[in-house]
Length: 269
Image (cartoon, rainbow, N blue to C red; front, top):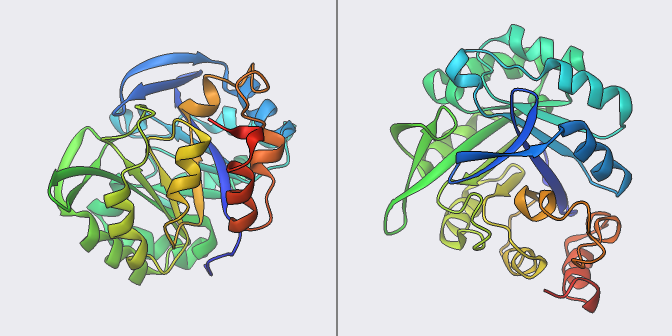
């Protein structure tokens, strides 16, 4: 997939059972509410896309989001990316038939890279997103985690990114486990390490706490999209009061326009 000159801002919804949840470092999940309510709100306020992740799918060996995805696809007209527990081409087929536009794959990709190659042959690169959960192990050193960041792999993030790019997948979804849910800002070192290696679209996730932080991270070249959870979820009922105006923040035509808007008084943090 060719990189775009337009930065996408994507609400990310982590799901456990019927509930939208959010944790810190992908642990201690707190129930936020009913996913459909949030998706409708984000859709009506101009979100570019939605990412759904089944946080416990790897524990049970299958994705449980089919009904949630069907409902979202029937009520909104917005691209949906769905991840968690996807291990077979049949899993991908099922989610696409339910209304997903893309699937995000982590555990099965690392365990069997040939699965990704076969999925691309069958469904096309544009449908396949490789999700990477990165955790710092030392100075400028990051390890890939699987099973929703529960399991270590020993796989170096930079090495894996290079391999993923060679597979010709559609996108990479890069999540900093260390920053997830903290609202402490993005892991700039991680992003600067990965972005030059990703000749395919790169979505970053983990740490967004303010529009200012989003603005600053977009100064790094090579970022195609920002996936945000806590910053949107906790304020979605009172965005005006919190100066997070989704309709204006999300609908953008270019990185420069997004940066200019985030720098304006309208969303000053």
